Length: 404
Image 1: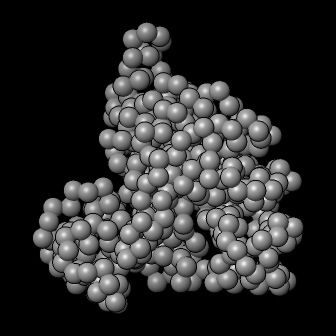
Image 2: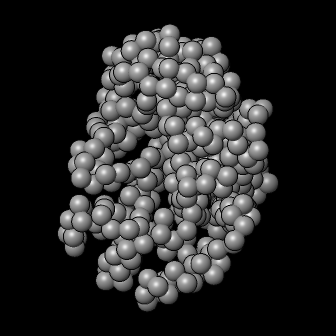
């Protein structure tokens, strides 16, 4: 089948984005959009600081607009924007029918001209242009700033679906949190205290899944809180668990959010988790490229595990293409092809445009081989298969959209 046909079908289909850091406009300052937020995305911050134009300390002391101008000048005017993150901004501009301007000020004026005063309407426009049906938020029950907006959950659009991120359970001490009209004094060293609070949060939030990130699955196995809190909640609430493995936090702390690295996450820990908890649905994304074949093979032998996307540093077209082809080879359509991990709403435009391009390359080749060996695939059959792959199957695996 010609790539152009596959590409056209992919462009027409809406996707379900199973992991983002986006929030609806009603979450005010937590809901990010606009040029300055795009330019100061931590991927671009790290790239800019690599030029040593100024120290990290000096850079982070500047107001955001000055940071954005420095990044625009260095990465888009003084240098060719060839990194994936820089190319992403170019794709975003093209999706909005904008071009790169010869100065930051002109770029800001051009961008602002199409930026709707009604943010809800603008967000709907971005979702429509990106052909994204809905996104899953990353909701933190230990973030007091975010908890203040949970009262808005009954009124947010169905295109924003909650999930609950539980990295915070691994801290120590006692802290108070107000959620859903009740205040809890949470003792992080007492699993019963954690469970009482988090069960209340689940009743308020109705998350589609629970999520936790860690350097490795082995690190999770070594913590009783993972099995006694995270997995207990998953079993009691019948929720899947998203494992984001292989991140080494703050290896260069002076870069702030841009200072995280990669930890090689041996999959023996993930294998043990799957063996010990066959009654929990897992989906996993591993950050190290060397772990990808191991993850795919594990998903072949454990039906309650699904590989999900190419996360963070892996989200490079050539890398995504190789990983996706291998997953098709070993799993057919039984994996989640990608998630955007977007933090700024306009990033949906480039993240999914680039994903569709990679999928078109991989699928066109496979369908051409299939047509030589079997009957040709019709456009209608391809549409049905890809609708299930990109929209229906991920939603079904992650528990659909909960009633709010």
